[in-house]
Image (tube, rainbow, N blue to C red; front, side):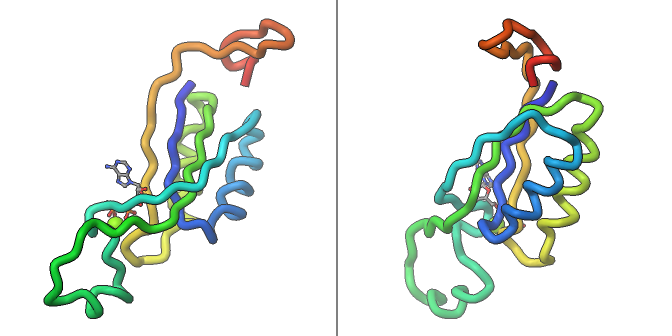
Length: 116
Ligand SMILES: Nc1ncnc2c1ncn2[C@@H]1O[C@H](COP(=O)(O)OP(=O)(O)OP(=O)(O)O)[C@@H](O)[C@H]1O
Ligand SMILES: [Mg+2]
C-alpha cells in the first residue's frame, strides 16, 4: 500500500475525486492548505506586480488530498491525476508517495488492503 499526498489547485478537486473513484479507493482525506512550490507563490499573473520589490514567500490556496491505495493502482492514479491536473502553468501541484506498512479497519479488525 502507498499513501499519496496530492497537492492540487482547488478547482481540480472534482476531477481528482473522479480519478480516485474509478480505482474504487476505500476513502480519502481532504484538507485545505496554503502552500508554495519553487516559485515561492509568485504566479505568472503576479510576477510583474512584484518585480523590483522585495517580497516574502507568498502562500497560495491549495487542496491536499491524502489517499492510501493498493500498490497495483498507484501508477494508474498518478498518471490520471497528472492528466486531469496539468494546465501547462506553474503551480499545477505535486504528489508525494509514501510506503504504508499496514492498515486496520477498526470496526472489523481487517488488516492490510482489506482495510482500505
Ligand atoms: N517540497 C514541498 N514540500 C511540501 N509541499 C510542497 C512542496 N512542493 C510543493 N508543495 C505543495 O504543492 C503545492 C504546489 O506546488 P507547485 O505545483 O507550485 O510545485 P513546483 O515545484 O513549484 O512546480 P511548478 O514549477 O510546476 O510550479 C504547493 O503550494 C505546496 O502546497
Ligand atoms: Mg510552483
